[in-house]
Length: 335
Image (tube, rainbow, N blue to C red):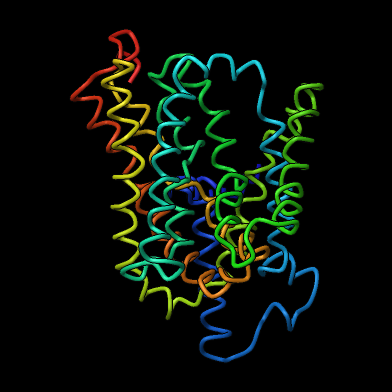
């Protein structure tokens, strides 16, 4: 009997890298863009045309973002939100209020250009984001029902809607019809997915793995906007913004969790990693606010570094937190 062909395990290898199913394709896309546009000065995807252009270049981003919003909506059970009300929503609100207040102050102090090479656009997209998927993976062994129910609320808060709504108030023309239309366009697939997923469990099961399929293509498309020659110049900004991200996302919610809710604090730390979808926000925001267009490529490059750094460090920080303030004994036995 002929032996079976050995499996290369590409997908498993991608999953070993933090946010790898999107981050690795992003790097591949950036390499192709750097070589074709940075060295040979031609646009590969425009030359090949569709469907390759919309599959692998930035021209197809909005379609994939719409599909991701729909798939995310189908995964949210309204019944889970009741459990999240116990404390998850409070923690997320504390975190978001601090993030948006600091973002407003950042704009008042430094404008669109920002400071130390970190633009207002990059700052907002970073500090308002939380990787719900990584959060769920980290707290799964020891988190209680309320911790796990926070996943749905975190997904909603991590979607582009809230930061886009915030960014639209800082446009040259203020908040107008164009911004309202953009928000409605983002809401429709999300609400439709949530409605269908709650009406029919089979629909929720069918689309449960939808984002896993979309993420590699979305990562490739984000990468197509990055020239690595320019991106390497953003490493200092990426490191600095990662530090700022941890301070803004952990400190307010951790203090609240420890002092007010009298909890170990691991939930606040576990939610402190950038979501991959944050890389989509600069492009969408610039579509309705032309003042943000000059900052899109540098914002995506900076956010890509923050994505890698925060997703790598977050699990280690949670483990450190648990050593200082353990979860319930019966929960820690499962670690």
